[in-house]
Length: 323
Image (cartoon, rainbow, N blue to C red):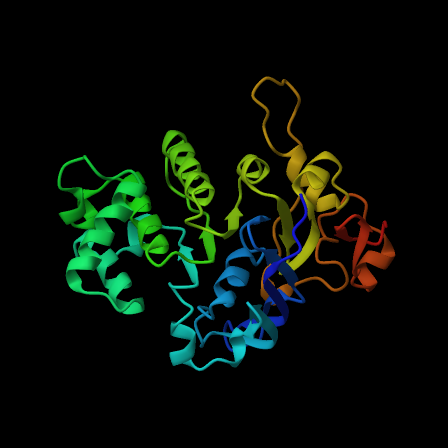
């Protein structure tokens, strides 16, 4: 599948997270785009820079301790880094919406869920309170909460994790955003509810309620089922990027290969091959390739020089000295 209508292009050189007042590169030299109608997935272990990359799009990285040091983030031709806070508010929630990792803690605990949705609608649209209430009812129906009692009038603590996540999706869809950023939207949910939430997101996209999606996940199965392209991150850098089918069929980077080999298969007695070692602390990243301390194919060059992200074929890129 090919897309020729870029919706969002994102470039970072450094996105520093300050810890103990020592600069640390949480995201470094990351560049990618999301096209209109496309679903792009970002995958990697915890600490790889996935969420920092996503939060940087709408400048949600807390400053301090974090700071976007350099780069550009374009949305529909507008560099979001050049906007004032007041101008940026027009994009947050309206043009770009987010579903955060934890539905348990992302909602206001002292406000009924219907009021939280109404508040978002009225903040971004010139609309009467009555119309906001009606639109809230439509949104709750769209995410499958209608006809289940007076759930919309409840406080978040009275709802299950799945229901809370549906409310989060309703809030995200309140203003028909062009881009939905879903940061591990099924965290802490059981597998049945996970499947329902993911099916709901795909269904809403099919109904044109969402144009494009940036999906962050640890789950390679979810990425393969939902995404058109995948970005694999490690050590704050993109290690491999390409069409989902290409990357899943023939991964090039040793880290990508390690991720796939560590996934348990339902009908297989094959022994798992975990990636040796641990994700390095961003305060103490190795020189050269960031994966060199765990790579089974490491060479002296890997420890001395950072490899560039090179295109292998047809948009399939890899950051490795082996290629």
